Image (cartoon, rainbow, N blue to C red; front, side):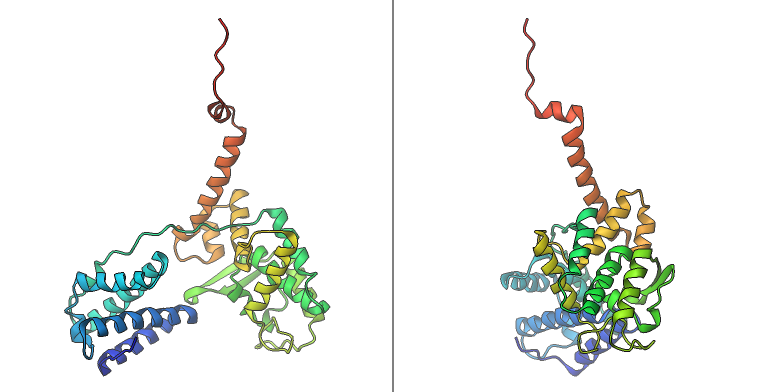
Length: 319
């Protein structure tokens, strides 16, 4: 779909993306998604309304135009979840532009996002998490690569890090203390306790790594010495879970989910877990309560006498 924007609108989109990247602290992948979503919306409007499309035309948009865009996207097979994300980016851009250009964005901002079922995290059991880490070690051909993969996966599970956070560690952090300062999404910093097992795993990797780990260089290295690609950890995790017969939901990110769920099961406070994970909103962390509740209901249904009696037909006593 061709995109014929006025110079003013092109400049506005560029400045908004810069704002998201710098001032709002947007992660690179997030900013890329914003660019794609808003550009796709503007491209549709350019064809839908005809001719060159600029800021003045944005101010005239009505709810029917927004519905036409959403219907077009759904016709292309865009999921409700992706549609909701795109609409969120469109609203953010429009709100930002309306504040600067002085037009009324009500029609765009009042557009309702499609409902979708939020996918719950799929954590591993504690035993499966330990087995996965042990099996990851068996996948590599070189001892230092095995130690590297174990160190990364142990950080995901033992500290609840995102894969991007683990791979952003530098050589200056090679000697882990009792805590680790992590810069997460939006540039937010948090302090994460380091388990002895995680510190030992990283120390073992540092001893074996054949590449110089200078303070300002990446801590985790690829075979040729460059920064480790997250795809390498995804592949070794997949190999390990296939060997163990675990489901396809077992990914590097599932180790982070497992960290949170196991803390919650052990009586961890939801607010504290939110801080450890670096979630901006408590509602994101609350997804783990749904996982825990589902597990508790299963236990209740299997073990509670009243639950069992409801599941079985009553036998009338003989008179």
